[in-house]
Length: 401
Ligand SMILES: Cc1cc2nc3c(=O)[nH]c(=O)nc-3n(C[C@H](O)[C@H](O)[C@H](O)COP(=O)(O)OP(=O)(O)OC[C@H]3O[C@@H](n4cnc5c(N)ncnc54)[C@H](O)[C@@H]3O)c2cc1C
Image (cartoon, rainbow, N blue to C red; front, side):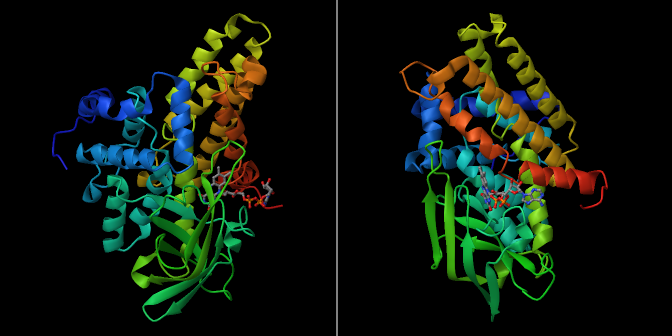
């Protein structure tokens, strides 16, 4: 990694990031052909289908960021970070977007959900090896939490972990595993003590996704992509050195991952990138919807929702590296999903059937992926109802019903 003096003030840091990225622009943007928005959306869809070249490019981009010393501005210095405030992470994401670099979507879970758990709870060797691998793009991570019988009631997971000498043997099924088909490592919430109260009987492990006994089966989604998977764990052996946190402390580790997942979903690395905002404005202007009284109320609602989300994200005290408490993550995640709803409603209203039927028009059918993907934002990372519960009980101190 290059050692250069990095300016801390946001505007100078942004200039520094642009300068570090400038030599690589052609190398990464050519392949995505960012001349048309449709091509760029198609590139995201290809990735979702597990396109090898897209994934290789994403890993390469991550390694470029790492070598340039800007992969992880808010991360701890002992793991290659700069220990800057989390706004600097957002600056890097926004500048990547602005300069037309391709999405790093395949890396989102590893960087924003798995890495925080490792940083805070993993033993030193695991922490250093895997977190560095994730931030260099050598490793892709996935989150093995949900099961067919445990989603909202996550503490009800049934995947069993049984101690066998220096190893643990895992058996069970996980589901909705985003990017599981691309992942090298998975953060797995496992029941190690079936007799303990349900939150106390859980332990977190880092699973090698290429290990014998791990089977990954993609699930086709209504957006056309297949970013989800079922993951079957049949007698998978995990050395105890790959335990994240103490035995019986899996819930604490899961809370670190979940709090960060919710807050990053509303940041520049989440689904509402500046690129999406820009496309929305372009769409409205191109179709003259801003001059149409029928569409103006929805435009106003969209602007209000996006502005509220961005203002709240800017006010948020920080991200995982600074110990963001779970309630802020829930509030931000709900504001993000609401803003995405308004954008989708607006796109659908101004495009009509062209949002869903491909007539070959530029930036029309390309919206279908976004519009059809928005309902999932009310579920991923915990449903709206669960966020309401978190805010009511942990934030406002209201009693459970
Ligand atoms: C895009 C996307 C990506 C995802 N990626 C991952 C991933 O990578 N890894 C992973 O482990 N999981 C992932 N998930 C799964 C996600 O975390 C679960 O879908 C979510 O937690 C809901 O669980 P469930 O689907 O089992 O629904 P259920 O828990 O069965 O909920 C069904 C309905 O009941 C409501 N409900 C349940 N309990 C309560 C309650 N106590 N109070 C009020 N209402 C309640 C819910 O709000 C919901 O409307 C992903 C989901 C999506 C949509």
